[in-house]
Length: 372
Length: 184
Image (cartoon, rainbow over all chains, first blue to last red; front, side):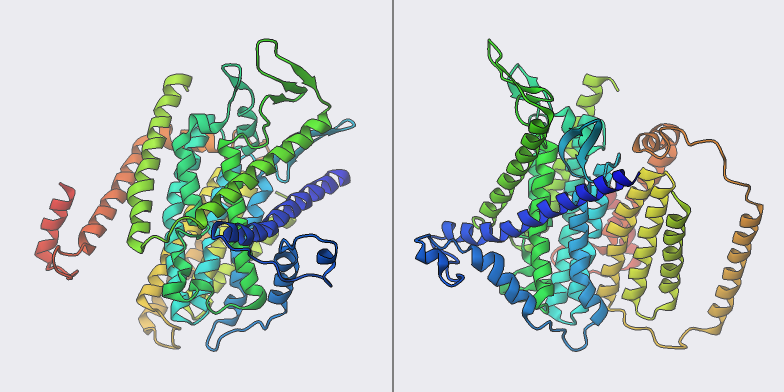
């Protein structure tokens, strides 16, 4: 009993630390990636006693983004405007961040790890209704931004909060429909089972990833996910040319940093969901529980012990996730912002009918093929 | 669900429900209501009705309460002053609350012990819930959907702006025509 608790706590801690580290490094990728795209150099000033320069290393801005900026943000004055709802103003950033972080609890980052006679599932919380849990927790995330905008006692902030909640509710529909189509395809709401069902190959070489079965859902989830994380081209809630900074206009210091971190954590979450549903999750192509079975006429085989397989799966999961994080950064620095009517038109007249159609077609195909 | 966990969620449910009626600002009341609904979802999940609990959180906390928040903002409801209610409302409200309380007490007194048999394997899963909705109670479910759809079409027909003008309000005789044209 006690050892089960320890294993559970370690799993939860490992997943949380992995997520926080990826989220933190996203900040660096964002700044340097933006600089690369805009033909600038980007953050390259802060250094610790010039150690790197004396050793002839280029300054990559790591100290800027990962040490100097967080210290600066968390030591700044934490300002609360007059007439604001003090409790809700302080609570709102954490109401925004908390749901995003707890969603990762049900994300499987690998299959199973065997230590001695013990089999450990590489998933912090083994929930049978995990896909429903993801949707429920994402829905609760609206409150943070909505209340942050309202509690600030500022018109721009309130407008930003209203825009943010309207946008998140609208695109949650498309997101839910995309996830539903995947759930109907695999016939389960258990994320670990969905990942396991994406193992194996078609035609002897093509990995059985969800993207082959549900390409429309993939596009829906990607677009709706970027809209959920409120980033360009869907960043109307914080459109600086109209609303100063939208719902976090009146936030400074640590609380503003928490809102920023929520944005990046949402980017990671969307990438994790895309990886899970459409790119095999922790599946490595041609890697099975006993090792690699390479395709080809002779079918080379490379036996691997269980721990090596588990490590490869965890690495594969985060490499795929990081790829989609970088794709979202690329999108953010490439596309211009939409107009508000275009945003709502895309959500309700574009993605929603497409999602419904995709779900109906999926249901027909599943019944016709599987006879369930 | 262990007893201490149930007690924890039950206390939160009662406290947040009291918060709904005891607070003065509509936004605070709404947040307390959202917390109460979230908490009841957690109780559902803990008692084995997993799918139902998550659906409750998705629909009530994630969508309906946010719409309530919109309404409060759009109507610009402010902190409610003291002693503005009429005395008749208070009397009726007290009587209704007393009747409900008496009913709950009667139910609690007459409730038998919890069934000792273990729950079926599939209990509360999405599969069993879907079987109930789409097989056993299909007609009732579809009729409810049609009713909600009709209400939605009606609301849009009432709120739609007249083309070319900026007017929203329409004379009552006109509403039926426009509803008919919207439906057909």
